[in-house]
Every structure is written in structure tokens, then in C-alpha cells.
Length: 305
Image 1 (tube, rainbow, N blue to C red):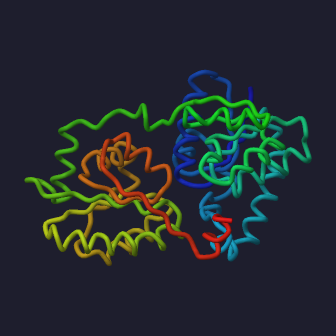
Image 2: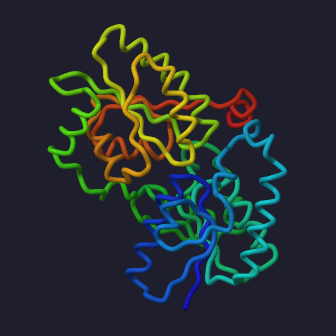
Image 3: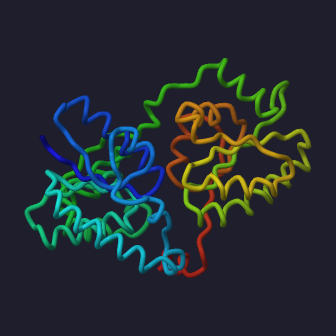
């Protein structure tokens, strides 16, 4: 039986890798999985090497307080890959961790196969990343149709596999109406959805911005209702930050699953979202949105350089 070693570092990666696991099990009954992931991957049978929330930050300033832990986790993961001897190492998103693991594995096991799921956005920033990736990544699975040429130009093979949001089932009108009633947005009241991210640092930086915008919108629309989808990794942080809003929001809890999130997305009249995977999901739901992102000053300077 073939073993694939999967590495996901945040809830978005956990969601995508769980879908990958489902698809692979349907295609190859003997496939087995090891690696690092969250609750959705656990639901598909993965026993994570450690709690994947240890990896849930990005950016220089954000990672600095956790650098020792991150380096220890990289070393631990590389050692576990060597022990498992998988048919392939599959890293997903979270390049700060996954690609570092892949680089170290390639150095010590040059013949090992490495795959990265979610192509680096070299068309938007850090154009040199694809060239660096080509030193230790064999194949890339891209979410967007225009991305493969950027990868193949640097010597990696690449397949466009599409974004799961594009094929997710649409929420039924009855489910949308029920959610709007639950959120207090029946009878034409506007419903605002806030998606502040899936990492603790993101929630800490984005929720004050979103709370300020919610207060401004409420000045014009006093009847405004608010809903917030909550990732398990930041459930406490989001619930605590939500207490600072003008009116208590409806929280879409992890137990409500993907269907609950999708219904909330489709039910909203407007969304304020952190600029990550949720942007594509909101677009698929055809909900108008404003996307934003805030980093520390140091991370912002390093990213713009």
C-alpha cells in the first residue's frame, strides 16, 4: 500500500487536504496517509504528528516569538518523513513551514518525491519563489488555471486541479432563509458577514478593523445583523473579539461543518474578509465583499521589499 505524507499548517490547508484524501481514497483503495493536519483530515483517518495549530502564523514579526518551536517542529517532521519513507511528501499552502520541510527532505533524500498543493502566488508577489521551489519541489497542484506556466517555466511539472469552492454544492434557498432568520436578518434586514482569518494573529489584527467598519455601517443601518464563521483553531479568540461589536453576532461554529459555512456565506448581503482562501469561497457564493489584510510593520516592510 502506498503511503503519502501530508503537511497542512492551517484550517484552509486542513480543508483542502481532507478533500484530497477523500478523492485519493476513492481512486486508490490501498492508499495510506501520515503527516500533520487538523480535524477535517483527522475525520479522513489522519493521526497528526502534533497539533497543527503550532504552525498557525506567518510573517517575520509574527513568527519570531515562536521561532524555536517552529524549528523544532520542522526537525521533528523531517525525521518523521525519513521514518515513514512515503511514496511522496505533499505539502499544502503554509510555505513558511511546508516548503522548509520539503527543502530539508530533498537535501537528505534526493530521490524522494515532493508535491506542493496550492501554487505560490508568484504572479502577485515574490516572483522568485517559483525558482527557489524548483530546487526541491517536483510537482505542483494549482488552484487557478493561469498558474501552471509560472511553475513549468522554472522546471517543475504542474497540474491545474481547480478550487473546491468552484464545485461546492450551492445552499438551498430554504437553508439560506432559515439562517437569515437565525441571524436576525429576516424581513429585509441587512446581514454582514465577517471572516477575520483562521490564525490567532490574523484575528487579533483584523477584528478591530472589522469592528470599526461594523460600527460605521451600523450608523447608517441600525438594524444591521452580523454573522461570523468560526474556525476551531481560533474559536476562543473570535468569540472574545465578537463581544466588542455593537450587537452580538451569530457565530457559525465548527460543529456546523462546511455546509454551515457555505449557508452563512450565501446568506450574507455583504462580507468583510481577510484576504485568503475565503475570498474565493465568497466569490463562489456570489456575495459582495471587501477583502483586506493587516500585518505587523516589520512583516509589511519585508513583503514589499
